[in-house]
Length: 469
Image 1: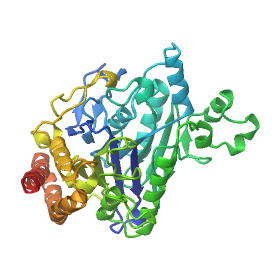
Image 2: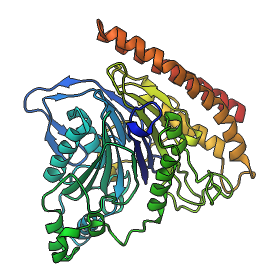
Image 3: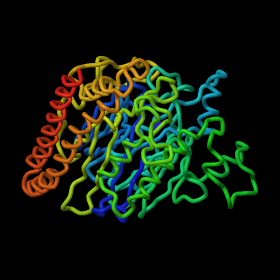
Image 4: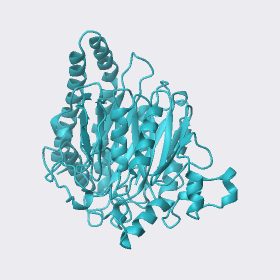
């Protein structure tokens, strides 16, 4: 489960495109943030992902990505050109048929994960439309079958993918079904996606045989090409949609509520939502003992949720050369997290931000991966420790523990986020001025600021842990 949403420049207060994503993963699925600098590659270089080896590009662009500890690709990421991408699992007839074939002794080809497609597009694209083309070509060439969940088999842990791809001028929704895809562009308003196909009878780019293949498989009536509905034809009707449709509708409702005045703070509010201010009135007890699967996700004692939100980002894209793309990112459920600004025009990240837990950071097929566990020098695991401390045992803890402790955390983190946000314009202005003569000095300025923010957050977490204990 994940949620991704974007507000275009005509509906934001600052006229910047602003992008958000919550990445929901199993509770042990550590997700460090990593940085890759621009790099030129020798001729005939190759990349090895979890399941596929493929040719490397001549040049890969600088980028940041939030990377599960076992994964080559990213749950969400941004590159030096202000291209930002996030993905969702979607459940389709194409994946269902491949999984059933495997169970019956067939050998469907393993392909790229949605997370691999995100990283490949960030490395190779200077705008969103180019990213759509890169991803479409890779989808048709390699497909996307294979488990994307550590410890899970291909049928249990696999899925097809939906993406939002944005740049400073427009956004695309791309939905991939096996080796086929459709993509729709928007240059105004807002859009969001969750864990179900959303492209219906209108799209701008895609595989040529979307309709013909659906007819061939018996998923669409032959004489209805003019009204062909991509999502209706390809969705797996055996997978319930109530947990995804309600979240997609909620994120659109919140985007509509502030249309014309959407800010990074409001995008963070969307990321932290548990249906507050609705007829549901938020969680009946508290967010850590959820009644529903919400945008900000928490593991449920009743075992009906996917796990926790493992990371969340809010990306602010530049509207002119006087700005830089900014990637606000936090580990853990964002209601208990603190967003820190990171920059693809920097040169590196604080070491602990990029560290996994005891299992380490290595690319491998998810069915062979073991659960990651706590490490004190991992930024992600430090947030997880804080979340566990604030939440306690949802079944056996004293009533009211989470709301009280979470208010304490939010008081500290809200002040830090406001402090960071107030400093960003000056830091960016200084970095842009330095870039005119010295790119290294500009990158150092950005790196130093992000590291200073991280250090303040780490110090705050350690003080909170002492106070809460």
